[in-house]
Image (cartoon, rainbow, N blue to C red; front, side, top):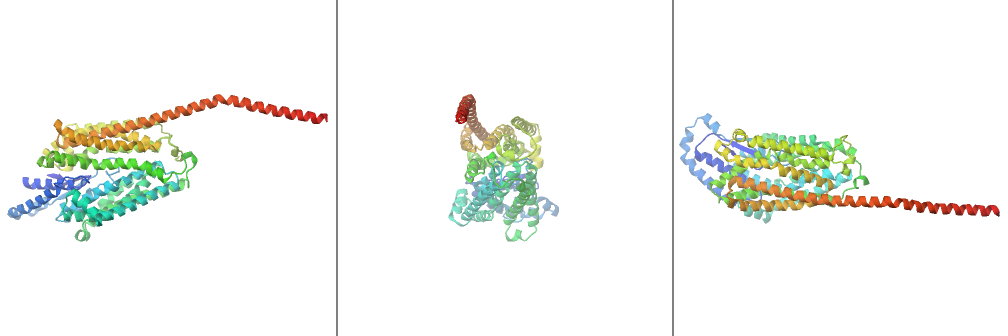
Length: 571
């Protein structure tokens, strides 16, 4: 039986066939790991379930001791838990490749008997960090749109240094004050041991948001200058570095001294590798080719106020996206009242999130196409790429990406036995569990449409630096999501289908609001353009009269001079 564990990315544990009780134990452990690491919103039954499971485990251990003695050494090797991890095969490097924590979870699971508790502590600390400070990564778009000179880059880096310092102070307060006790122990209903380990992990992660944000800022500048391949290689190198350092640190003394440091140090090393690659790429390729300050042709130097005004709506949207999944897990579990079906539904959601995300997750990066290529953006005049990309090209490219994503979704999720094969052969679940995932995965087939609309229009609004109109979309998404989670059970929809269907409703509401905001901005732009054209026509109509007046005045001056010359000649 293969089970899921960890936070976010695909992680699965494949164990040898055992008794139904043993399989149920492994499955319940996996669900506890996901519930404990799902973010600020979490079921209150998590710690109670964990304690009950540990008690049952001790009770079973005495009765099964004779059975273990009869096992051969080869059978014992087969029963030893093997942790596998798989990277999401997408082109989106925000939380898909960059923050893949599968290898990191292995660093904990392989070294301690209380691996479940350690995984829960690390997963909770990591998810809290991503929720509170993760939106700093969206400063990539500030580098993409605003940085046209060395002075602009200095201002962007200064913003991130200040934000990173605030994040360090916040992490320290969570670790050492009662604020952390209430947020972690009380809000998440974890016991003292898990809460203590979580606060310690949160302290260790204090400097990560600053390093991550600095890397993303320079990645945005590279994307502006069409060096997306370098950014992608940096993200892949991040993941490779995490895997390598987990393997190295597993053979060090850290597994005995402080096993929590194994995934955290690996996370830092991966981010450091990524920051080094994008930083060196910036200094090697771009730094000497941009001016000290921006000229009037690109609107002059950007101010910190403009950067923050541009960034905060995007950060709010990212924060609401991060909290959507924990909200879904919470409502789905409570809808089934913490029964066995609730445990099963949360496990199905854990399996279907990353698999369903693969065919469409990369569409989110379409929002970087408009700022990077649209020639109506004055800042692109400084970038001599030798390419001529029009709005029609961008629209056709977006449509092709949408068609490709929908085709992949229907091929994988609707064709017989393909999705089941992925779940059974790659993730490692059994056939009965895979069948429960079919309907939620088929609902994911409709996600590409709202995601593409949102990404395309967001990119256009980023080009115009009108991101403030996007803020209401994040609020509407949460409202629609919670409303669907409340209403759909009365229509007979429960379990994982309820969760994924509500997520789709939230996406549709968010995309509709983005479309309304884009129409509002378009109408304002059109009215302004019509007004400018009217003023230009009026100016052209009045030009001949001015010319006549100026000519009349010049004729009078010439006549006066001639008269003066004649009078002098007569004298």
